[in-house]
Length: 312
Image (cartoon, rainbow, N blue to C red; front, side, top):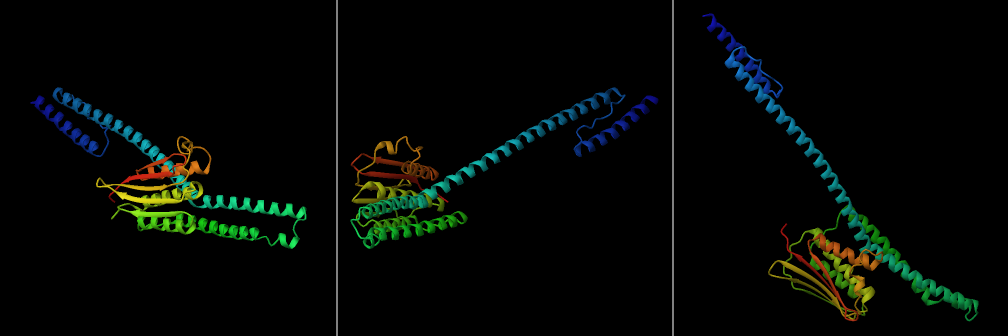
């Protein structure tokens, strides 16, 4: 009778400890343990339950370590993503500066050089007394160069304001075909000695605004290179689409061509031409496309931008 009473007491005490253990575990206290019972059967059960508690505690510790490692990994990745975003923004700024303001400043530098040469010539003539002083200062070349300089400075001022506006609020491009058409028309007005033709064979083109801006800038840079270097008589701009969803923008001229050293393996050289070609390739890469430049000295230049249709 006494033995049965002891068993009941052990069981009651074990159930009480088990209930408290379960509450502790559910509240998140995995360090909780059940008191070892004096009963042989209950002693084995309490020992096994304590082993389970220890296993859960160890697993929680490992999970917390993994979470800490993941948190550090995520933090590093966020830092890397921010760093890449900053680099991408710097590349974009450099590209926009090259494609607009840098070109105007290069033109200004050339105009100043021409003006300086004209002034030096007048000073030489004056010193040699071959012209009267009044005649020297009414030289039409000086007047023309000063007017050109004034126009270029105004253009540079306009472009820097446009760039500031662009980086505050990126420009919207409604239709890449009309944008290229506008570039062609402007080229035609500025270069009356070069015939230019634009042919569009794309009924509909599906691009986002960022990709359209890169394509516009590639076209702009290619036409600037034609104007500055090609000595061409005819320029053709062609937009084509294919059933595979691919597109091509081709800009070709019949000018003097460019040496291979200007565009193969020399994009890192610190010259405007090489930087421009490098920026064009980078812009093509940004839209998932490919830029190819074909040329032989004396046989013109062909710029081919290939890119895919995208769904947005």
